[in-house]
Length: 453
Ligand code: SAH
Ligand code: SF4
Ligand code: F3S
Image 1 (cartoon, rainbow, N blue to C red):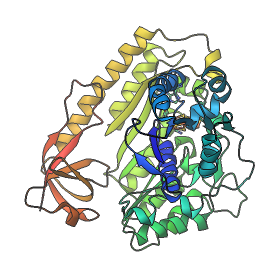
Image 2: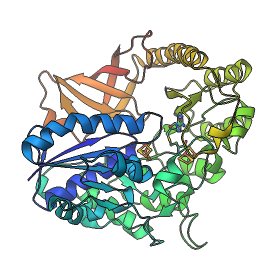
Image 3: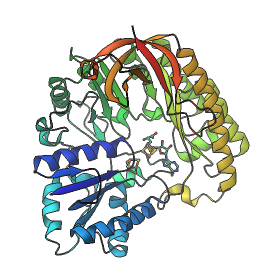
Image 4: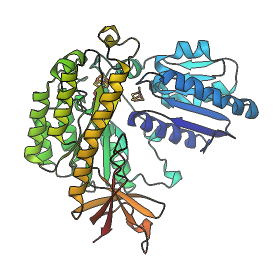
């Protein structure tokens, strides 16, 4: 049977989709890139901003002709499935299966039930088990695919207990649950055995790892020290961290553990203390900058990136200027920024002092104009420098890799055999900047052109 899987959202969803793919292959399903001939069409959805629900419903509309033509089934997974299962089942009669992020491992059984087409199959109960367990047979990719995951993600914690006033994640992913150290180390070993030199630890809030468990359970920092003992591992990354949980011992780990990379994604959301307070972020611009300075003390070359929300209720021009001023101080290498989007059921929807949409649009434009200048300046300063690049994939005549600072670097494949470079860390001299057009809304697509030295 052929399965088409489309994924939206964050790296958590991307990792969930990879696990679904692993399970599907294990159960003899075939994955296809387009819905045209699929027997099963799965949408792994994101609920973070407005219109998420409508995007799913309109995609279902596009899939209906294929459903009819192939007598196929449609399944909805991910955060919209979790948060809007009732509405989805009441409003769309074309859905055969709805399941939440806690039920990925049950996918083969859920599909068997849905394929019988008796009635809608729905599984959105929270998993009551206090432990978070990912069986080894759903770790992607399966050995039979022959693929090597040069830089895999490893889930270490799921859910979120922070309840920032704008955010749906605690309602779509539930409370924090940490995976056991043994299971995580087992997964690290699994990837190392298959050739991976870099891993990224994953969670909505990785640095609260272990806080849902008893005192003798490892903390996030202890976990980092444990993982750093694998001699074959050359690079260690993690995402995402809430600045509120950032401790001095985490900064110290960057001194003690050389394989921790020189890139830190530290979502700030706003530079204004007034807005941060209303967002319930539990830090101020000063405490944020102080934590950054702990890190810079050990790693002067650390690249920072962030997430910012503009036009949060009550954000004045002066508040917004605080955000721009923070960006100037931080010189982020890239920024993900969005207009505030009200989410049903979150406390911020009760704030009356909303910011006009036009003002939001202008602020987002101003923000990217500033960030483009910063991004270009930073990228330009990297020209003529030499970086160690971990080569990850090859396409369209180039071989691509990343620096420790997470900058994408490409080299021409002329005269080279890509398969000999992939999975290797090699020094590259940067000769030019690619993909940097300062007038675009975002420069997250910057890449550097280099040559092997
Ligand atoms: N756990 C991470 C963020 C996860 S959500 C953290 O605490 O930093 C990813 C990003 O989506 C957030 O950082 C935020 O910038 C954005 N986001 C979340 N809810 C939003 C909303 N209601 N409107 C606009 N952007 C939102
Ligand atoms: Fe959402 Fe805040 Fe949790 Fe991040 S820390 S996932 S923004 S509630
Ligand atoms: Fe979206 Fe869910 Fe991730 S809402 S951002 S897919 S946790």
